[in-house]
Image 1 (tube, rainbow, N blue to C red):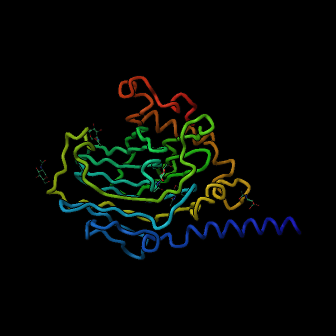
Image 2 (tube, helix red, strand yellow; image 1 turned 180 degrees about the vertical axis):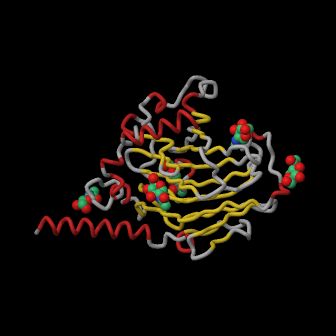
Image 3 (cartoon, rainbow, N blue to C red; image 1 turned 180 degrees about the horizontal axis):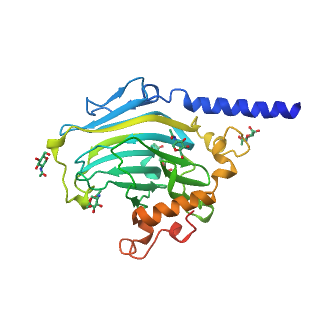
Length: 294
Ligand SMILES: *[C@@H]1O[C@H](CO)[C@@H](O)[C@H](O)[C@H]1NC(C)=O
Ligand SMILES: *[C@@H]1O[C@H](CO)[C@@H](O)[C@H](O)[C@H]1NC(C)=O
Ligand SMILES: *[C@@H]1O[C@H](CO)[C@@H](O)[C@H](O)[C@H]1NC(C)=O
Ligand SMILES: *[C@@H]1O[C@H](CO)[C@@H](O)[C@H](O)[C@H]1NC(C)=O
Ligand SMILES: *[C@@H]1O[C@H](CO)[C@@H](O)[C@H](O)[C@H]1NC(C)=O
């Protein structure tokens, strides 16, 4: 009976923890627009849909009201259709202190009609970025909503696209390699003009006759640990707390089937890997590049 009680208690606590992050998950409750953004950007329907708009006058950015440390951040996104060359849609987690900046990025680099988008990923740890990996999507990201999820726990970060892992960044903090584990991050999304670099290295420019450009977002779900101050660094990483599902052993390393999926994506759709760009780094590759990646 006592055991059952403990079990029920655990289920109850998990339910509360999940509820905390599900409640107010709707855009209307959980995000705000940064000022100066495009006035056509809006939350739609019952609050679970959002459009970000870019025209010659302005782009747009939203950010979550709450800060998180570990968990999964899920968003369905339908990218700008047609000629989106020069236009970048970003969806990322970012800390607030620039000197020790942590960031986990998805960025979608637009293209001419019929040409492939690039799914650009990056991570900043303690102020240092330069860890890009890029992929072509294996689907048309403008025809419908697709699921872009960042899974972040004390052991590893996994970028998922429609539940297929495309990238992993493991925690090698014990070996002196920085990892985002000490600071809260907030969720951001933006739509902006980056035609100086985004498409074909900046050669293809934004064609403003196609404006306004519209990216659509749906079902933002932060199933994550809410940051309540510095004590969260131990609370959110506490692997004996049953509410912290992200610390459970199944999330410490990809399983066999997931490794197969990751390999399929990386073998067939990877466009760029910073760990293979010896020229750019003059042979001085990041220390994590010589560690097991998955
Ligand atoms: C940012 O981090 C640095 C280095 O830890 C620290 O000295 C500084 O006070 C922090 N700034 C803010 C605004 O918290
Ligand atoms: C999105 O992907 C994540 C990671 O695979 C998954 O847990 C979640 O259920 C998916 N959400 C939807 C709405 O498909
Ligand atoms: C755009 O299309 C060109 C030609 O197919 C391709 O080389 C490039 O990688 C695509 N994506 C971007 C973002 O430039
Ligand atoms: C921009 O788009 C318009 C409308 O699709 C098209 O007529 C025009 O040729 C495009 N301009 C350039 C420079 O590609
Ligand atoms: C971790 O969680 C367990 C179970 O909820 C709790 O008893 C323990 O005090 C927590 N430890 C820390 C450091 O928060």
